[in-house]
Image (tube, rainbow, N blue to C red; front, side, top):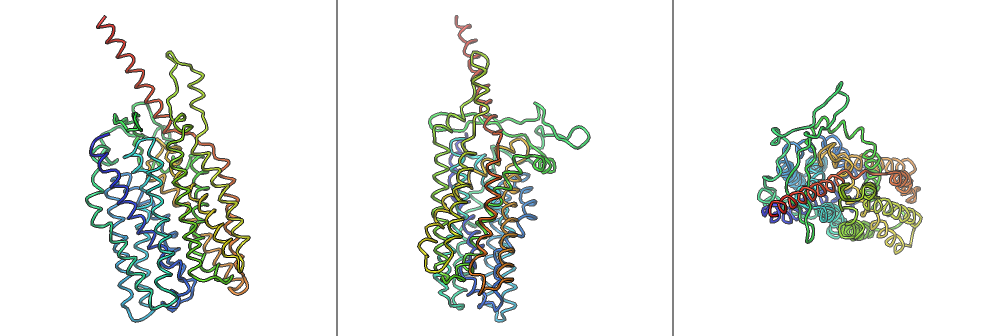
Length: 508
């Protein structure tokens, strides 16, 4: 690994994390103060939910463009575009506060929110690509977790800070919007210097001279020959040792999309992950409405969201550290012994070991499901401490799903697609599920009546979680990247052994 790569990687992660945090803050600004925001803009509360829902609605179409930019033109281009859109949206949203008419004020504010929503796929789709390019196998999950957790941290801060500033007074909302704008502008001066051009691993467009995956047969299938795979001779540091990494095949964007559509493991993982993210998005978007129906304040709703996210951050970091450092995962990453002087049976057994990532993913999902059921049961008056406890337990389990899912997506799509498009598909599933669940929740509330529903629309989340858990436990991944790295290490060891033997023979 080059000295430049080692020096820049953690500043890269930190700058990215601030950018991700600011985008999430923009998303959640109104979520904790929905009733007060409706008074400020003089519109109904259902319209306010679209400040959150627009992020979910735009994610799926925009992720196609963002994945193309990130995979074809590189991280720098995608992240600088995301930072610019996010900052511009924040400024426009704040400028709307100076418009006197409430109709015009809402229109301009929503326009700014749309720009922030367009920025989100350029930001959220990047972490696995950053982790894969800048970090070795023993650090990837932790780096991925740090970058992805910035998003819920931003949402948590917005859920706590905004209600505290607004304090149920519509005239205080511009101050909260100003603070959100300041946060979104922080990473912009840093981005051009930190998100520098990657000179050691070129973008796919810059790699046009390299071998690529070509379509074969009748145009229905794509195949990779032995010469199609571009390998890299870089070495990733792994504790006190090192591991040679192999770069995945350079797959054209259109072929990558088709490969993902045919990858059964990826489709199961994306569906399960999508439901998990959809549940979290619905939780954040609807929590103030649901808790208000059973007699709790906006501040208390903010505490529930904040508790879930803070405990979720802890759960995600625990999962990441365990996976990167645990002995079972170190053994899982070890290369199988070659048949030359080794034991073929041991090699075969190593290839089919159960992935620790998949194990954590399945158990964390089930744990979060139980907590979500308990939270729904406790959604009633005068038992706020129980709600807070189950909210925290839910967050701890649900967030452990996040880094493990995204790393699993890279594993099962290795050599089939670029990291950005695979991640984009995962997040698109999440945003689509969140949109459908939030709209359904709102429709049920409006159909039954806010005064009659009594918070029972909360049951949409655990019902959807049943499907997510079933999909998670049916997931049987093939760890393609791990197998490729084990094979690369094994081949390298055999080559070094042969070289040593030849040198000894020459000396003799």
